[in-house]
Amino acid sequence: MNHKKTARSESRSSTRLAPVALWGLVLPAIVALLSACSSVPAQHTVRGTGDLGVVIERADGRVQVVETTGRSVLATVPGVGDLSHASVVFSRDARYAYVFGRDGGLTKVDLLLARVDRRVVQAGNAIGGSISHDGRIVVAQNYEPGGIKAFDADTLELLAEVPAVTEDGTRSKVVGLADLSSNRFIYSLFEAGEIWITDLSDPRNPSTQRLAGGKQPYDALVTPDGRYYIAGLFGEDGLAMVDLWNLDKGSRKILSGYGRGETPLPVYKMPHLRGWSIAGGRAYLPAIGRHEVLVVDTDSWQEVGRIPVRSQPVFVMARPDGREIWVNFAFPENGWVQVIDTVGGKVTDTLQPGRAILHMEFLSKGHEVWLSARDDNKVVIYDTATKQPIKTLDSASPSGIFFTSRAARTGF
Amino acid sequence: MKTPSSFPPPRFRAILFAAALAATGPLLAAEVVPEPDPLRTRELIHIVRQDCGSCHGLTLAGGLGPALTAAALADKPAEGLVATIVSGRPGTPMPPFLGIVSEAEAVWIVDQLMRGFPADGGAVPTAQAR
Image: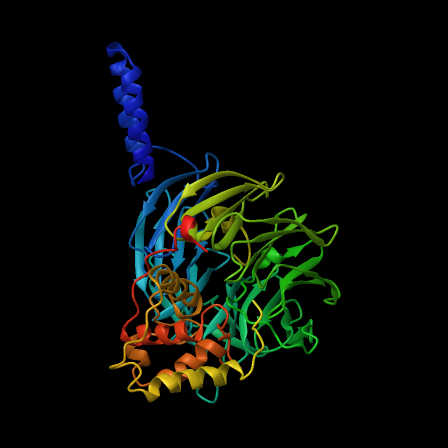
């Protein structure tokens, strides 16, 4: 671990300079420095979790536990499985991170003790998950076998399973899972093109309502107020939208025909959608096969603009105050990040934070953003006011970065 | 990245290219598929593992896209796989990769996939990156 290396080299130079009498001070300092770098934090330290987070070390099946006040890595937790695609939700008390891995693993990581609390392998191939509003149910969304599974958040005991099978026997991959009020969950079926809402208020007896969706939904979001669900569609120019306050009306299409009939450009990585796209009465959404961010009014759901960007957008994320939108891009343009000013409605900054920027995560008030630079093996922290890097942290092939502030948000 | 327009169309060219190789003998069993230079080889392995891995998984066991393990590909004709890399598969999320990899590199990738794809050695170091 790099920190150890740093600690040792500092201690060597100190001993050359220090008189013998100072050894009594220097030695305990060395011990303290080295133990601070150990992968298990001191058990007696009392601390909160509000400034914690996890970074996925994609290739090694590990997560780093980070703290955002001093901007440091507290610990590394191994044994989390195949994290080629991973996502994380947090317990309501923000002590536990539930990590959903590609291999179908669901791992409950204790952030304070920096260890795996429990782990189950619940499917062959999974894509993510969600947690109920009351925090008692964790739901995994699976590609193989396609469907969702609900688990007790304490024990990870299986409570229920809803296979995503439609009348013709097709089993669909599940995408775009999000939590709704009353322990309901909403998700989309990639092959069947439907939107399902499963009520888990009686966790062992789920009931599911089915809505039309659209062709090949790839991901979806629920707005931060929990009212609207929007599924991005790969197979058609448009998005499917459900008003959850008027469920009897079913879903409708928004932004239909945004591609204007033009041949789509190749999409080398599917965009990701979450409630971070909503800012100031507008939704900022990645176009598919067009190098644009689409802007929609969230009252009328009409397009009010489109912003040309460098390449295929992957994450289109509003800074929490809504003043800026940060955008990263699909391979091979994934070394770039662009910042859109929401007042002017155009790109104001073009940054190169590192090679293969896979993810961005804002601190809850938006003054910093952490970016993972996979091919540089580092996490880069930017000051969003100056657009300058503040610090980098070593991280092996980092992908997702998840802060515990997500624990308090619908749709995260 | 835009797909360069060209004639014959990429898909057809890829099939021709693979067929030309195949005509000289079994493409992937006995024939030696030329390996790119070491730096490019490392880069290609990294691209396949990491970026193809976005959809197909780092272990190539599948995701939104199908599994690309040797076992999963065993009964698939190599020419078709090369054509899929070069030209994509319309109607699915699989995009054309011509321009990012050459046809010859696609043939090499398919050959490696069918043998069991090598482990990722990481990105090419910055100083050597092109």
